[in-house]
Length: 401
Image (cartoon, rainbow, N blue to C red; front, top):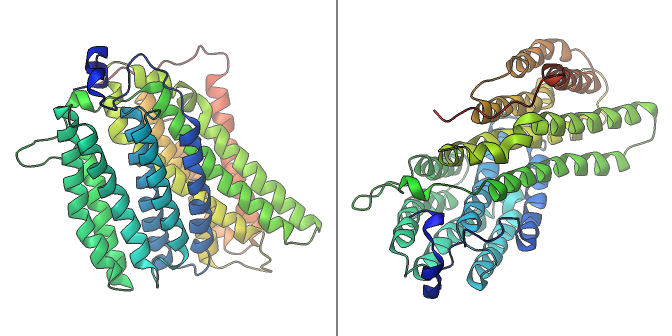
């Protein structure tokens, strides 16, 4: 049963499905809900640079993927159900509480507070489903949909909780396995023996609402970069080197925003509205946006290194963060572009290649020059976008295939 099937005659049953004729704009409660993630992203980006190695990077990725999944699945719930209904408001508030509890545990998630982080994550996803199943009892299709999702989260809860009781690499492996179950289950449309997968007609999404929500979360990620620039610069001296680093970091943030919104971001609502595209977007957008957000969070970590005094050559790990953040963003942005237009501009892989090329030279220079190089590469990508669209009519999203 799709959203459009929730006819006015069925509303007497008081199921909290969205009215197809109601406004799809984001509610103030959803914006309030997002505030938790400002803090979460900031803590993850700060934690990444505390001890730069592959283990720390893997831990940061696991934390980010878990935090992102609580937001992404909740956003789909508010797209499917009416966020103005009292029970849905209560659900969003409860998820917000759980997400904030997860956020407080981030600094010690792989230490003493692992159970708090994992327990809150499991409680959010299982609690959401167990709350919705009786709420949609008059809508069997929606109830079966909730049952499928709860089943998959119940399976992933096992490695989440087991991981909380072990430590070190064992915890990292358990939580990575749990996330793999959660992400693969979504991609496969939550198949369950006896129930099958979530039907195609239940995977449609609302263009106006969901596109706006993804854009808002990307702005939250950029807010982490702005927060890093402001707080780190306020602690530094005001010599011209620090002012130059400040300007490079700010220009890089501005370029990330510009590259994200250019064409693909502007046309996202129209693209989702295209025939049969909502389902395709639903299955791909959480992954592509996770890669872009990971790139922005890593770039914010690079800003902290840039604005931190380090005379002479910088360690290779610093270069990996400073240049790897923009490269990761461009990879995700290329996939995002393919979602909308079914093609990838040469400037995306070209930018990644340019970042890899300057990495070897950046090892022999102060961190400022690595950041400057990343900024110039992003400026080149933004300029290529501008030149490609200059004087041409607006490009329409690709037809479904």
